[in-house]
Length: 326
Image: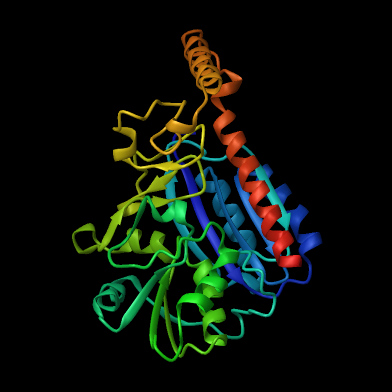
């Protein structure tokens, strides 16, 4: 495959057949060479997948044939190769975990702002702009002047709002996230908290980078994405961002130029805490990968970063689910 078609999609719609729909979607995706993750819940669908252009179109046609999915938010980009290793379709309690089951974007949501109007909103001195993403995502890039709540998971966002914002003082709130889905729930939650003017960027950063010309863009840095590309920039082109193998921290180009950065071993954020034994182990892994490459083979350690990342994300999801259930 020379070029993979990548789509990020979501939609808040009532689904009462998740258990039967999931295996049908999984079979369709596997049949068409699609990889990635789709999440289903009673509140809708969410996910990012990639595959051959015709295969991805088959998935979109399947969804379009179901009237419930006619309003899906879909964003497209391309990758030089498949950025996922397998296909998963999961049934969850929420398609994006906020931990507040009463928050329903299908009933109430903030005011959508298109990319071409977003710059004017950023320039309004009365507007507080909030980046609803997690701290490790924000460090790669953000809009100038935006507030970083410093959250490690989306479930921490309600507590941040209740502790730091007051609807009597903060009259205009504007929010953004990667693809728009977190802001759907965040805006619905904030309206329920009494905030009257709540705006959010339609389609998130990804659509903004796709549609707003670079010379007019107010975005600074890279946009973190949850696949092997790590991050994208204007026109959704992949960047030189990386992820530290040891601590899993997203790394900017400046991080990778630091004297404390050792590829596939450590980075400026973890070098001081790395034990001699761990460093030696990682250095040997890197050496074995290089030797395997000279033989035209793929060493198991070459895919280990993705495996560890998936394990970490799975652990975080489980923790979020426990928080939601509590």
